[in-house]
Length: 346
Image (tube, rainbow, N blue to C red):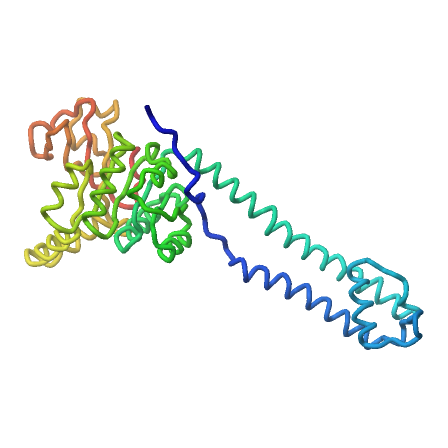
């Protein structure tokens, strides 16, 4: 019997706000009190134009009191402007300031009572409807680099969901515009909260091989068909990661070794490998399913503006020089190199 995804123990997704809450409140209150202080100074300088029906004497405290009841439109009538200058000031200066102060406080109430509750409700609805998103489990060095590269390649940050136990690291993901969830990615309820079964891809980089492999096992249990890419650092853990369910296993230590070995074979080889791996390079590798119009064509013909490199046909990997690349078949996966300024093929 399948379990219904539980969101009770998880916080809703979050996105970064442009201004911190404390700074926003401070700015609003500062502006309101600055306007009120200005009115107090003007009333005090023109106190002879006011009359106190209580004792006939207008003190500084009376001025502060009159300013507050005037700005807040209370108006008890015990202190009132009597000179034409004071009445003109009330009409032309205090009235606009009165509206400004009211709007500031009403706007603050809207921002912190209504709007933020609305944003939480909206994010909860987005969370319920997540589909086709990319889930990044772990926002360490590798995870952060992956997110930056995805965004540079044109992925909308709002399609990326980052799960990370460190609040400090999550703050960085929020700044990048991603949806974030603080939690343990090896727990079922955490992954269910980000709708892992509806994701288009899952990237696992927990920082420790054992943790990453456990996360891969959990993801594969909940999402049997979602592609999983995992980062491991020990060679003997690559097999374990694949057995756990990872479709792709990346070993950054091995990749660094490839770059070092490439530099020994020629000074431009490691540069070209880095170029291929980065969205900022001159060329990029693309992978796509063969289209109907590609069937029967050679790999070279199907690549168009790019250069066809490989065909993946079931479990077989066919290079561009092999006979199998002379005619593309339905279901083939094509890997090609294209200039970065040419749009990615669909």
